[in-house]
Figure 1 (cartoon, helix red, strand yellow):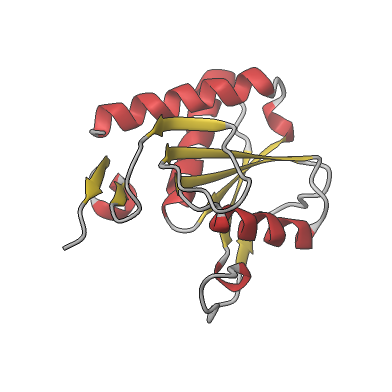
Figure 2 (cartoon, rainbow, N blue to C red):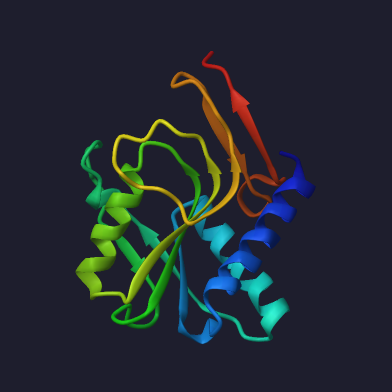
Length: 168
């Protein structure tokens, strides 16, 4: 995907979120660190440009909650408001095994009981190890398990693109 493809996918996701959530003031978009954070803030901006109301946004680092990696860092949650009884949309760049999303849900539940949790991803590459599926998808990209999907965003990488990389 080039920059235009990324922009169109995010705009479509923003519209899909609004189709399901008529009141953006009840929404909280929480980006999973690192690139999910940038995408969450972009989605919030797109929703604001459509509805004139910016949904709350937050940041989630799930390192401590991962079950497949040694969690050396503590989880960081910067939501700025309670998540209890709110409609949460977790935002991430790539959905792969589902373990990051499971960790994110564990972290959120530790903060309170949301009314609902949904998932928005720019790329769904398959290969799930857990029964998790996204509610909003920018693009489904079939990959082999040995390939790497690299999402680059302007804020962190200087450009917007998605590329599939072969192992070197």
